[in-house]
Length: 276
Ligand code: NAP
Image (cartoon, rainbow, N blue to C red):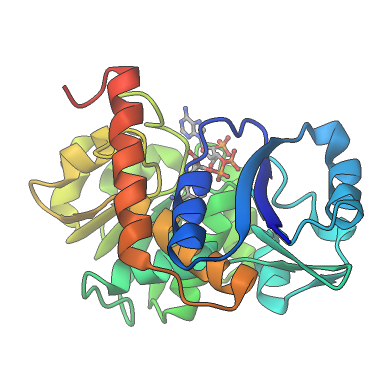
């Protein structure tokens, strides 16, 4: 019997998860396919019921469903509850289990480059859904201080209170300083914009973007003169690696998944006119 996996989100047509997971499933000889399911907000409940009805083995969850899906599941892992977002659903004998692997993607993206988080001062730009996983990862990593800047200050303040961090007003971003800066807004996605003034990078040693299209965002271009840079595919890759383990119980071929992701992004950059 072929098993079925997939991703639910809206939009989902440009998701990189199918190439990454299908390559890994094929390589390990697992009889399974991974598809992309566009699910509108108003159809989320039926889509989740459909996972059970169709006996789909597991799904990745992306924008805009990561938070809304929580009350629809049978069990939600403690970490996913704390983060307040589920990016992975596993169907175990008809019961749906929710997990979050985004935060592990953030940690692995930093650790693989030998970057120490413990006792460091970290600045995070953004206070949306993805930022929650970033903040959780840095808390778990033992950061000394986490400072949040967000266009809508109230959101930064609420997130800071929840995770015992500090929120500063957007207007003060030009004075930001620390060891690591992480860009977790959607600014720079398919555009050459950066949410931060380029002169602040001299105040940091490491700059990470979670946006990955284009691969070298304006944020990373501005940063690379002063900082070690980390592109958004590193987080995507490692959240996918952890997700694959939850889906199959097996260790995936990480190098192959990485190769597929970078090839696919290069193709998408070409289509969109980036990187020429
Ligand atoms: P979200 O919940 O919609 O949050 C969007 C964030 O961007 C908010 O903080 C928002 O600020 C900010 N923002 C939007 N437009 C802005 C602007 N013009 N100027 C300043 N700030 C602006 O989205 P999300 O789920 O957090 O996702 C954010 C990005 O991360 C997306 O591009 C997504 O693709 C990417 N992502 C990457 C990975 C990965 O594995 N690499 C994983 C998850 C997400 P306000 O609060 O003021 O609106």
